[in-house]
Amino acid sequence: MLPPTPPPGGPGGPGAPGAPAVPPNLDHLLLGAADLEEGVAWVAERLGVEAPFGGRHGNLGTANHLLSLGGDIYLEILGPDPEAPPRDEPLPFGIEGLAEPRLVTWAARGTDLAALVARASGRGVPLGPVRPGSRLRPDGSELSWEITAFTSVLHDGLVPFFIDWGTTPHPARATPPGGRLISFRAEHPDPAAVRSTLESLDLALEVDEGPEPALVARIRTLDGDETELR
Picture 1: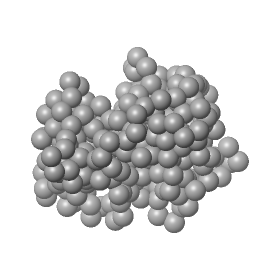
Picture 2: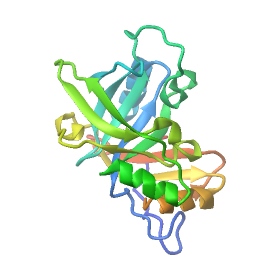
Picture 3: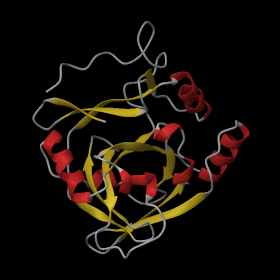
């Protein structure tokens, strides 16, 4: 259990001045694990609830479990799909090499991603191509979206990729609750560089100085306690 949440960064405080406790266009947090079930157990130990199976990303060799964090925000636990055939390509975000589960990046909501990518490129931030994505739900239905390239995630995952759900209902609305996200921030040895990139993408995220890159999510559990995921 953690002490009560401190005020977000602002004048006289750490991080980007005036950064909100939770970025307004935060879509979901990605927690990677080298073993999917280990990731589910790791989260359950901290939040007190087991995330149900979400689905498989057939073309990526991964699968996920999901928990809602309030509103249109959710936690995605991403790991290798134990039923996927062997593949030569590395998994997204290098999750197969993680020593323990951790937050590897986050997704920001966007629309007209092609225009967003072009605008970012003009500001010197490469987001890579826009690609379609999909996964199969346990009931056999397909969830689809568009995203900017995973390979374009910058500053060790502290700068997100973008996702557009189009006409697909947002997954958080049909996902069991795991708690409520009350703050989300980043740490980096060079916070000014990270802030500069985020500002170029019109993203507001508190970035503090820290010994190594990290994302920090503070969550109020269903029991009313507060805990951190990193």
